[in-house]
Length: 402
Image (cartoon, rainbow, N blue to C red):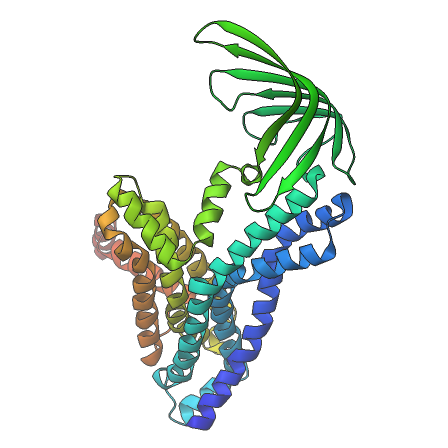
């Protein structure tokens, strides 16, 4: 039996690695266009780009590992069904339940790897993404500010610079409208200045020279003009990610202990902590989807060739995969509706799909076909039975007897 188990695992592992590489590449494609543009247009160093790609991979693996395992089970066992090897195994006394043992062993290994990646490696990768992004934006200021254009990249500020020297960071003909303080706005003009980056605080420092500040106080209804020889303005680089993206990126970059402390702090302050809890619960529930996918994959792959639906299991697999990740989104809404039951709602998709997979596998164990053809036959029989007992059918029968 161990030889058969190893053979089944080999048939699954090879498609798993192929699917994993392809899926990681596909998920990276959305970011690669931005990265290539940074290299070609903005002159970002290749080494920084490689660091950014390497840091993104752990977060992508959290989704790619379970999906790749699911399709590996479908493809590997589907190939064996198509070649008649599963029929030979059943003739030798190997039942679907017996085939599930090596698949379950792979599911355990995949879940452990996915859990390590999701709970520890992915947060580290997101911290690296933040660090590398900040370094790129600090070193290459032209990613944030453009010469001879109105720059609105920093919230609450409109910036115009006539000239920007990319080598020295010197700027000229500066006009800034600053509304970050709320009701009081400032209009700042300067002949020249210099941009300096501060990596420790993730800020850009604009040091202006020989300029004027025009400030209007709406409460006191006063207007003030101030001349200066030197004046400094701080730009928060984190705001370039957007407020929502910044908060989400920071939360995903936190370690598990930091997330627990953040959740406890929000609860003590009476604030909503569901968003932070969702990130923590996803780290520890999503990897166990491999068990549900193992059951579903085995049940859907064992479709008899004589039914003429060799790709039926693959189609059903896509459907279940879509429903699974949609149910994850529903879990977030349910967690917001009932925060005390948040952990249950995030475990619910795995529990439901494990039950569905076990049910489908029990049907395969009893050699019962569950297909579109069987469903259509059942519908036709039910329709015939309904028409037989209908009044119209009874009147026609009486008329024929007469």
